[in-house]
Structure formats: structure tokens, C-alpha cells
Figure 1 (cartoon, rainbow, N blue to C red):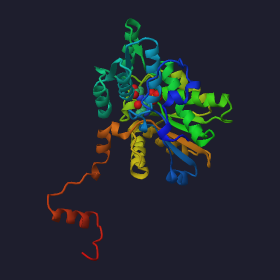
Figure 2 (figure 1 turned 90 degrees about the horizontal axis):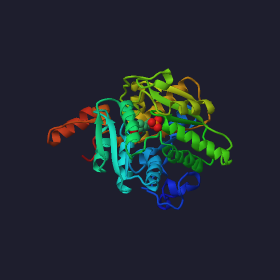
Figure 3 (figure 1 turned 45 degrees about the vertical axis):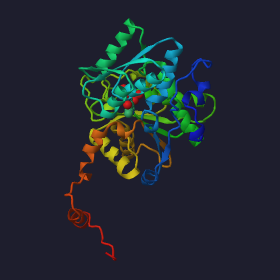
Figure 4 (figure 1 turned 120 degrees about the vertical axis):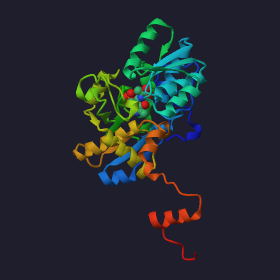
Length: 364
Ligand code: F0G
């Protein structure tokens, strides 16, 4: 495992696997090299080896940075000076940051009122033009595709293959750290770009014989936004996991391909179960990820209850984004932990003695 202090970002680390002009200049914020955190608690509870790949530790707080550094570098090499994307928030934040570094103009289209506050603030502060669409992500993506046929503005959504190329480095890092392939990958699915990327990464390492087996890919959608599971477009997707609130995923076929080829599964979890998993991660594991990321754990709990996961297996849960992106969900979820007292010691003593029942010190 490489040490953080000599990490050069995913492009420099994995250039031999990327279709970029090696002599060109690259835009990097030293993304990647995110922690693979072993979970003693879940491993024991489920009789598995469970790891979290915490992608919230990327520069803008989500996995999008892996693909964004590659696609922005490509846009610059191709002479573009403006880029555009539709987004539920994280792609927009990443696009805005890498465009700032690369001196590109950026335009981000977001569903009005439906993106987490942290993500909106990132896009604004990095200087993107934030265009709110009176509609959902799918409406925004449709507009973006049409705009890029009319104007010389580069499209940086994950329908752009360079995004997939960058994001596949997540799979490389897991193997480089474990020195073998895990048995299962659990991953949230929105547009399907990330599951497509991981599968591509594992297959590439398999083809060069870096690994001798491949993981089963288990993708998870939210029940209110589960078009691939249901087999039909969802016109009005709804879920509190706003990052994966998508009714017509751009990489639908690639998702089916990844789960079929790997003998995995595409399934869905309810908002209630996603919320429970989000709280388990924060309360019991000390990991603050955003709600959508918790779909991975909600999925593992569901699959394990059904007896689908072979005991003793190594399972990696991809936690796609940082919890600080979405402070509202966190404070709403845990407002029972917010206590108000009067400005005197008496109220504090009452609180500790009567509510918390903390023992007094002997010497007191
Ligand atoms: N988790 C988070 C935190 C995301 O932001 C996204 C997608 C996903 C999971 C799903 O990944 O789309 O590759 O299947 N966010 C996109 C965005 C749609 O605009 O930020 P996917």
C-alpha cells in the first residue's frame, strides 16, 4: 500500500491503464488512495471480512474525483475551454473544482431543490455556473446532451468513457491493498457509472493476471428510484438518498452487464433501511458517509439476511461520498442527540444526574 505522502493522484499512479496522452499535462488534486477500513464489528457479526472503501476522503468528498481528473485532463488536451454536466450534486462539485484548477469554464445543471447543501455550496464556491432545472436529474441530463450537440462545451457526465476510465482506479486500489480480489463488491447505483467502472477495473487486472478471480458485483438502488430492478423507467423517482434519485440511468445496459458477467445482482433497499445503515455507520463505525453511500451497507444486511453471502468471504462496501455533503440529513436523523440547557451549572447537573445518570466523583 502506497503511503499518502508519495501519492501522486490516480492519473500518475495508473497512467499505464489510462487512454490519455502521456506527454500532455494532467489536472490533479491528488485524488484516490482512499482508506480501506476493516470493520471488526460487522466481520464478527456476519462471519465475513468486511471492508469499507471510504471514497468520501477524495478531495471534493466523493468518488467522482477519480473520473473527473481524467475527463478534465482529456478536455484540456482536446482544446475545450468549457465543460458541462447534469448532476445530483457530487459530479457538479467535482466538475467545478477540477475546472477551477484547469482554468475551464463550467456549467452544472441540477434538479431544483433536490441536492444536498454541501454539494451546492461546493459548485458555487468553485465558480461553476449553477443552473437549476425545474425537473429531475433525468430531465437535466437530457438537456445537457442536447446542449453539447449545439455548443463546443465538453460533456463530463459518466456517459463520457473517460469518467469510467478514471473511476476504475478504485478497483485497482482495492486489489493493490488486499493483494487479491475481494469476493463481493457492494455499491450504490444511480446512473450506473461507478459499478461499470469497478467492473472494468477488476477485469483489466484479471486480464493482466494481477488477480486470479473476479468479485461478484452487487449493485443497490433505492426503492423509490429503482428502474433497473423494476425493469422500467421511473418517471418521478423519490428517495431521501438524493444522489441516486435517478429514474432513467444512462448506463443501464452496462449495469446489467456487470452484474450478469460477475454473477452478482442488482437489487433495491428502502429509504428506511438506508437510513438505518447510515446511522449504523455513524454511530457504530465512526464513519460519516452520505445517505446514498449507506445503500451499500443496507444491501449487505439484506443479502446476508437472505443467506446469499458465503461465510468467510471478503466483502468491500463502496462508501461513495462524505456525510458532510449533506448536513441536513445528519441533523434530522440525530436530533435526539441535540440537547438544550439553561445557562447555569444547575441545569447541567440535572442533565448529567437525571437524564444521563452519570456517577458522581467520590472526591466531589
Ligand atoms: N453515491 C453517490 C454519493 C453519488 O453521488 C452517486 C451519483 C452514486 C452513488 C451513484 O453512482 O451514478 O455512478 O451509479 N451521483 C451522480 C451525481 C449522479 O450527479 O453526482 P452512479
